[in-house]
Image 1 (spheres, rainbow, N blue to C red):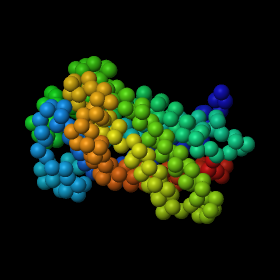
Image 2 (tube, helix red, strand yellow):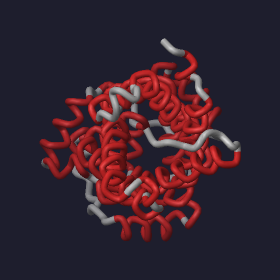
Image 3 (cartoon, rainbow, N blue to C red):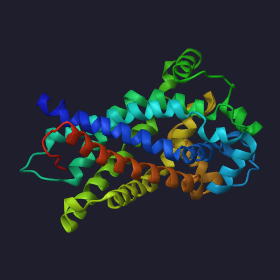
Image 4 (tube, helix red, strand yellow):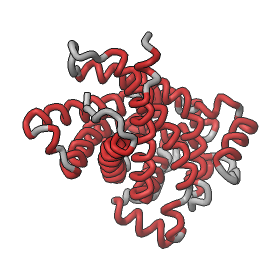
Length: 317
């Protein structure tokens, strides 16, 4: 293994740019992520064997209701720990993806979408194993203070107050066991296909568009649209598993004992296939806009850093 390629200056710059781009984008669109979490975390009536009387709401209606019931601050509840976790997660993913990519890509082999998909999957597995505890803690923090129905409270379990990310990690590990910090690792490992598909689609679209219009004409609007299309494809293909992942991250002990397949079958049995896509509208709005802006910021930051550091001219591989 060529360590110089894996631990190169360019790989580090891309990782820092990916982290900075992700933090910027999430800050802008965080309220949509809050709504997405609420819609995904509504517990399935069949698990408690009680019908949930809530009506499904669209994103705008859910935003208005949340502000009316819990105040404007509720839209940004848990922003700080999310940004910290996202920064760590994006750094790990971008560093691993581009580091491994440099090891397998040469001038003679050129670009290959399937190879990028494989590299993205490996990077995703490493990222999941290292950062899942951060996202489990984040799910708890985001729901803290939320006005839930008595049925949801019963399934979510004991109402524990967390002072922050570190406190949440400590209390979850102490009260529920260290393994609880990886409670959603099953579907998360399967979901490595999401960023892998996303990156493969993004690099493929960017390569093809560059061939037609030229690399120098890849402006902000084009990069934003390419990022939006890539994330839309990956989100629609993997969304049902994201619903299961959310439930496992902040569910009760009963919820965490259920397997991914059992939760999926319950959802289909009681709500039909449409139940697998509960909250998809908010998810698409949030994740597509956030990811598109992230890729735009990422590309611009990479170019800017190479420019100010007077490094060799940046070349998209």
